Length: 251
Image 1: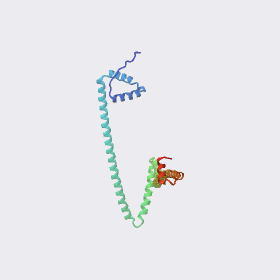
Image 2: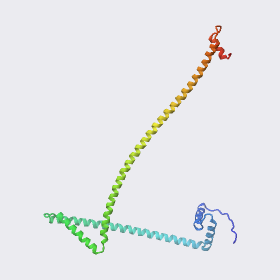
Image 3: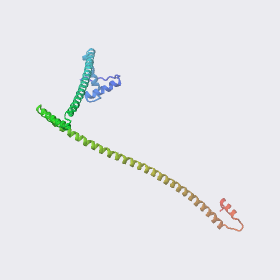
């Protein structure tokens, strides 16, 4: 096997990043960047420039056609949905309009024999016949779907109630949280006050201790002076002279 030759080339940082990514995908490691370059050179040599350009142009053309077709299909689908919605709305309007007219005519015709009750009886009969026709057409699943919808509606109502309860509980917890935060802030203020007071007391204690030590020193000095006066008392010397001698350190 021929030994590989080391070459140094300059590449764009984006190309280097892309190359390392491809090397990791194809060869399992970013360090096999050289193998990726070898394969790229071989592929370039095999295809040359023109086939690659033709393939790229064809791919771009195909993508443009696909995008145009997808947009056309989406537009057609949107238009179809809008048309169906309009037709459904018009049909529903006509049905409601006809129903109101028929109800008024029915009420006018049977105004002396409880027309509302008769209309309910006719609706029940119509529903019964409709179920029979659906059963004959093999639409038994409609009934089960109706029951399933009712069950889902009941479940949705239960979920709404649960959400309402959870919202109420959350509101209570929020209030409790705010109350605890307020208490915590108050405790922080009180703690800071106590800390400042304790610090002030410590400073006052230190000041009193310093004054006491100074007073003790003064008392000791006075005691020594007094003792000196007592020890060296003389009728020939005044106390002032003795104190001057004491301060000058004669004794």
